[in-house]
Image (cartoon, rainbow, N blue to C red; front, side, top):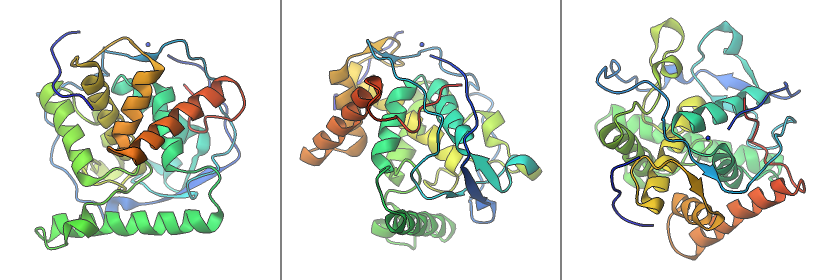
Length: 279
């Protein structure tokens, strides 16, 4: 993962609904609500849009095989208070990727790494429980002034399996270096005047997607050495970026290789990219 970045200096289609849907558990009762939005920051999608050179991937419109079909989510209204179709989840993925100028295919490959489509139902239940406990520990830690040990509260959680440090670092990068809100107001604003931007991984699925996309934007800029990079990414760069999302060392290298395999298999119409359905 390269160091600093220098100053300087695109993808869409149609959706069809799938049969499956996510049960939405209102995270509003647990979340630590952030204050008012900072008006000094931009609320517009990034003008810097990146793409993976030479890659064409068909959209996937079927059911999501993973994660467990239950999520923590503060609804925006009655229509999404209890159920959210899989196609809408994929639409959120595309929205978050576009907002931060990240290739949706790359984001979908990372999400597929973090949510194994071959996982059994029992494994999905255990994963949901483990990640939810980490989220709850982080909420308690923020609420009660750092009383929960970091090994319990700072671990990875949510659909994108982000650690607290990675999430906060990405939010700071996007806001401080790029001058853009990590979550646009129309997404952060929820029912009953609730503003959902807790900066807690796993607290809200839709917010998680913006945090993870912000982290990928940060990693793209690090990999290219250009702040707010706009342009093509080679498959080698994609491997490096995906690996950096996971961390460093041999395990991270295998993670990056797995992301590339997802992309190549989807491009060859061998295996779907389950989170890829551009709007």
